[in-house]
Image 1: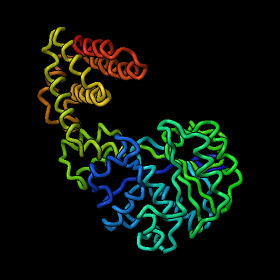
Image 2 (image 1 turned 45 degrees about the vertical axis):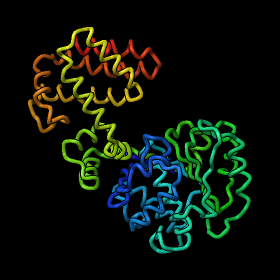
Image 3 (image 1 turned 90 degrees about the vertical axis):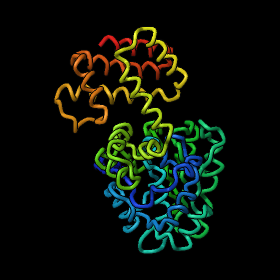
Image 4 (image 1 turned 90 degrees about the horizontal axis):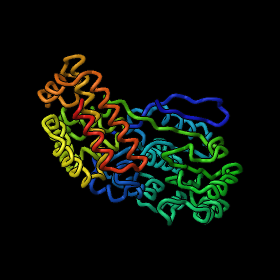
Length: 387
């Protein structure tokens, strides 16, 4: 469930997830990857207006192309229709969850004067699509990991006194808002507390709790949560034409993150990594200690993808545990590897499989804590071998 938090409401309202259909997501991933917030975040585009331009080319009609997440969209549309637009919003969610896409839709809808907003046809929408709308401002920052007080003052605080050039609203969008220093947050706090009536500030963040409590309490907070596996799989199969077996793997790997699922589906490297991980797991029972250390060295050369490998290992052994308990194939992620899964289930006890899954989780925690990579992986593989 997603949540909307409205200042003064005394609580939160449960919401759905945003998922896009039709041509909206069938844009060449490789053409978009270069402008992403991060390599992992398909939905998190740096040049949001380039995205709008491409979507317009594909006859996208704004909110009409959005499936799910309808309560949040209704909330935003009602705010426009009833003239109760807040001066500040927080869009919270992990990379790839759709924060920037949803913020773009809202910004364009606020500036659009047609009935169906954003219409993508009026002069306002066309300017936004071309990236030259004078009343939609993205706050940039020179340092990659910090938004300084100077960045905020120069582009927002000192600019809000100037009225919109041609629209009703002047919209400021701050991406990676969790990177704002305390001084930067304090600098915009006064604007959020006493904003000009035409100012709307959209804060996009992977961690809303990183923002000052005084900022959080004065913003409408929209927290994007994972989409259901069924929706992710249906989207991958119907829109990206991913086969059923691969869609199961991608869906489990993505854990409800549509952007992550799309990136993996478009990546040849991901498919190669999947095959490598499966081969390691299938042949592992026959390896001696020396061969285990060879596998560790091989993975050390590919350690930038270790989180993905560990997720595959976890998915695999959950399949083994599931098959051991139910003997059902249909519920498995790696259905095509049923022979290897059946073989592993026959030699591992329930207790042993639980130890393996716990060891994978511990390995993830230790790597996040910067424990020596080779040591962590050796302990993990020896635990797998012993159980």
